Length: 287
Image 1: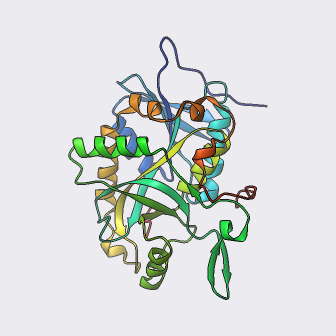
Image 2: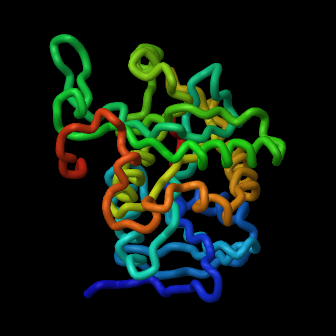
């Protein structure tokens, strides 16, 4: 039996967004930022919270679980259930570890690349990602106009110089200086590390829907020191970020074929994708 989400559009076209986070605390911060009343909408295996934003946009918030596999499955479920009334944009959001000094604790980052940082193989000469191995992509590139619009909206709302750069998706969070150094050597453009963005972006790409990632920093990427985590501060920053986003304008920044075609948009993938995509690989302190 196919479950479909109710169609809430009427009159002129309105923006429709899906926000995927890992855990309920992140979902609650996003919902506080959205400000409007939420109602629960059932999904196979769970539910999401739907907000009719004062701007006229409809924003669905889904706590999909920790890790790229759970995030991909949850996002794909919501995207499939909404196939009759497609989302305009998918957002991976939550708290993250930040790479100092570019993304200090309490800062907000917007991904200009969503990268699977540990999807690959260890070889005698070092780590090789799945693109190097010839099995697909490790990078999704959000539409630059969306990244610029979000960063500008955050600056206008008083966020101190939100950082843009690659947000790395990992299945095992970094807990040592050595691994942090290895990641920054492979990804010098990295600003943050989290666990779900690539899974969300994979699901969105396979449904032909553009995606971007927004994170707020709770801890530094490096030696694991829970005493230095500032989860409450990061959740507060996440709430403020979602209060500031220009929801109706976001989908208009995407090329028309990204929101109207069921095919994967060619520029939504990394230019180095030359092989068929592999099957999908299988509380919130991130670093």
